[in-house]
Every structure is written in C-alpha cells, then in structure tokens.
Length: 87
Image (cartoon, rainbow, N blue to C red; front, top):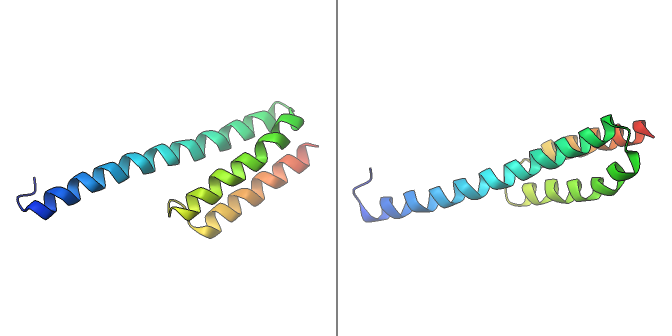
C-alpha cells in the first residue's frame, strides 16, 4: 500500500480508470460478439443495422486510448467484410 499522499491519490485514480476501461472493453467485445452471432444466424438485416453502432463503439475506444487506431480499423474492416459476405 502507498504511504505518500500523492501515491494514495494515484492509486484511487488508477482504480477508477481501470473500472472505466474494463466496462468499455466489455462493451466492445459484446458488441462484436453480437454482430458475429447475427451474421452466423443469417440475420443480415439486423447485422447491417447494428454495424454502424459497432463502428461507433470502436471509434470511441480509439479516442479514449483503449484500442489503437489500426486495431480498430482492422476489426471494422473484417466485420464489414463478414456482413457483406453474408448478403
């Protein structure tokens, strides 16, 4: 445990950031899983409606520093290809 006052504050701060990042990471993974599930179940219309929301979630994850730009771009590209192939 930290002894110095500023170290205690940093510990509290990092704990809050950790919870925020875990929630955001969970949201990203759940949205991707949902989209993949819709594609595998041949529900293309629902997948097409969900895809912009997944893109938005990935872009926000990049903006906050949770994902790197190229990682999000790669995920969006592969998901887009998956949805178009399902048509």
